[in-house]
Length: 280
Image 1: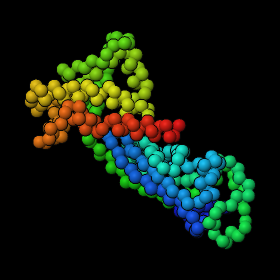
Image 2: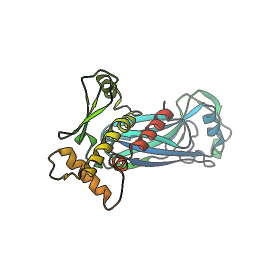
Image 3: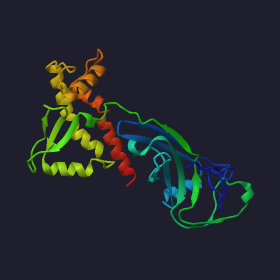
Image 4: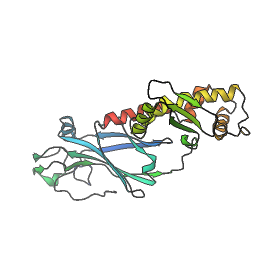
C-alpha cells in the first residue's frame, strides 16, 4: 500500500506541505531468524498537537504491513514512540513488504488545528472523526529473501511426541532414529500443540524444550567422537555438520553450540514477549 501525498479535508502532518513547520518521521529496521521477521520501529514527532493527543490517548500510533505476493496484511497499534518491535512469521512474507506508519484519531475532535500548519489554512479549524488520519510517514519497502537455512529447519532433525504417561513426568529423548524424538507427557503435548504457533510463546517453547535436549546430544557427539558422516542417523549428520562448521578451530561449549544452531532462541523469546506485551 504505497501511499502518495493526497488531499485530506484537514491538515495531516507528513502529507506534502500541509504542516511544513513540523515533522513526523519513522525509523524502521528489519532483521530475521529462521522463524520470524522482526521490525524495530522508532518514531519522532515535533508537533506538540500530535504529541499531546497521543499522551492523552485521543490519538494512537498504528503501523500497516502489506505483502502483495502473499496477500498478507497486518494493522497494529503501537503503544509508544520508541522501542517498538513487531513480529511477523516468515511464512507470511515473500519478495517484499510495504510498511506505513500513521497517527489516527481515537475520538471525534471539534475545532481541530495543528501547530506549524501551512499559512494557507489561515485560522480555519476542522472537525475530526474517530479513525481520521492526523499524521503519516512515507512508505517503507523491505525486500524479503525467504531462503533462510540456518539449521535446515529444526523439524528436519527434532520432533516432539507424546508418551503414554498423562502428566507429571520429565521429558525424555530417543536418539536411535533419523530424528531426535523429544518425548513429553500427553498433557504437555496437548498444551504444546495449542501454543507452538502463538507469536508470544512459540520461541519460549522451543527454548524450554528443544534447547536443553539439543545441547545434551551435541555433548554426546563431541565426547563420543561420533563419525557423523558415516553414522547412518540423519540427525547426527545434520547436527554434526553444523557443529563442525561452528567450531572451525574455536572452543565452544555444547550449550553455546546449541544456541547458535537454534539462532539464539532466548533472544527471540524475549523479543516475542516484548512484542506481544506492546500490542495486547
